[in-house]
Length: 423
Image (cartoon, rainbow, N blue to C red; front, side, top):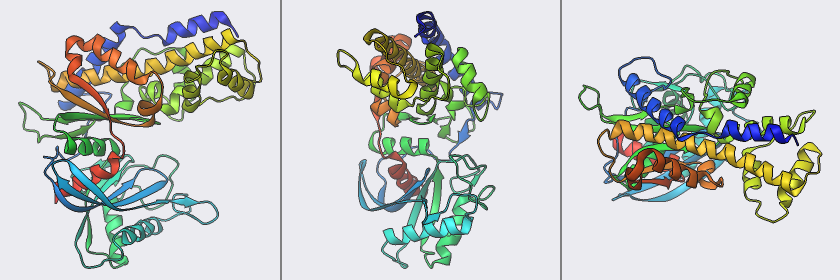
């Protein structure tokens, strides 16, 4: 291990409080530029939906379409933030050797007929009762109202033909009608970050910001448009594209090697998909590793969770990945490197929250929940503590009013709430 390089790496990933305050200020600036339709690194996508009252009631279908596992759920909203799951079906969109609805050879009609079939299962083939459906659709879409989400481009290795450029709810409605389920009416489309906010706000009124902090990263918030003619609604920042950040040589290397250079700069510094990549670049340099090696965010979690005196987990991992036996001290240094990469991620995400808070509450920050869904927030060591530390360093005494709250399963409940609100 090259100790000089290690020392330099630790310094490069160490982020100062001044840098974090600047990040927070720039997030606020970019939000306010975006609201004036001026150039900004944030997409500022309108969701066309506000916040629930918490009193919404009734039975609604929720479709969660954001990855290879599709979920359809019948949800009963009981008001006062209470709800129950009546029936739930989860099915993969691809089973090797059996079917594949996401490959390039798949057609839109086949995909949406499959989805309609799952919906039919959830409602036990009922073709008479009226069902309203909310749809969490987590792919880049252009939207002009709460119903009309048109897929811009597939991501996540999806390639089904005949969907890009089309309104996904129209495709779903056509499939339902083909199968005789015209009684099921899709009425709302939202993305997963918006769904998390709706789910949390249904249960607690002190909630205006939500975030996905997992393989990818995004944040949305409720915009009141004070002093303007805009209609209050949730704004999807697509904050993974925020680019006013202090980067180092490893950030630049990852960016240059990525599929889309100069895009998603913040996401490439904080999300689960990329922090393992950054660690990989560092390990290649530290050990002058020849050949292809790879470390994931799961590996980072395992490294940080190794609390035994001789650090056997770390030492075994390095033998497996690089073929080098290391000392206990070298394992300790590797753990320090993993810690500083993960901690920087947490610091930057928390600083971005401060920028959103400053925009929403320019005078005083009241008691407020920021809801977060995702495996990095939920499971990665050091993340939560470092996020609270950053909130305290930037917001001072007001940080005591801010709680970071885990919200699991928001995609389904949020879709049902969206349907209830739009009905």
